[in-house]
Picture 1 (cartoon, rainbow, N blue to C red):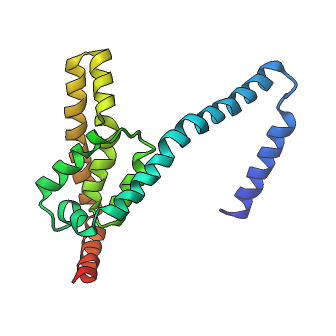
Picture 2 (cartoon, helix red, strand yellow):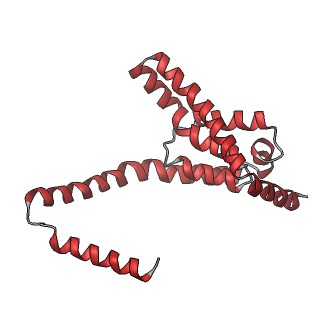
Picture 3 (cartoon, rainbow, N blue to C red):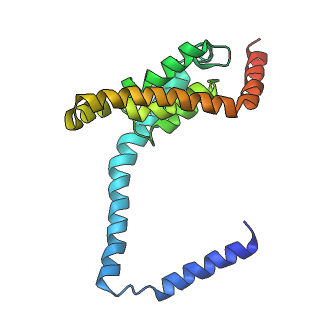
Length: 182
């Protein structure tokens, strides 16, 4: 960050703190509500979702061998099998878009390709069993099925696009993992 940008940020922060009418009831209540929402988020989401996700990611790193990750998600894996498994793996995990990130990072750092890992990242929150059942229950069976099928299809497309964009880096990563194993 340039020094001028830092100075402007400090000046605008100070000006906001100086000129915001904190004694006005609406401003005071909105500030309080913002912190209450932050507290609710910390209590309900971080403790019940993110912390377990970090433990699951750690369990994957400990109990799932790198060889099996490479077999199903690595650069040398069968692409059809790789994207199929990655795009439907989220059905067994009740994860949201925040809690899937540690899981994505775990399998990616264990050697999964960016394509299958991105397919998992995209489809995980969209096709977990709870989300599909809730969608089908509230919006109808047709939309529940459409959500599941669409999420799987789009996750494969997104994974393939990511693989295409980062194919050079993926090739380097695959060569490095082959050198490590062989």
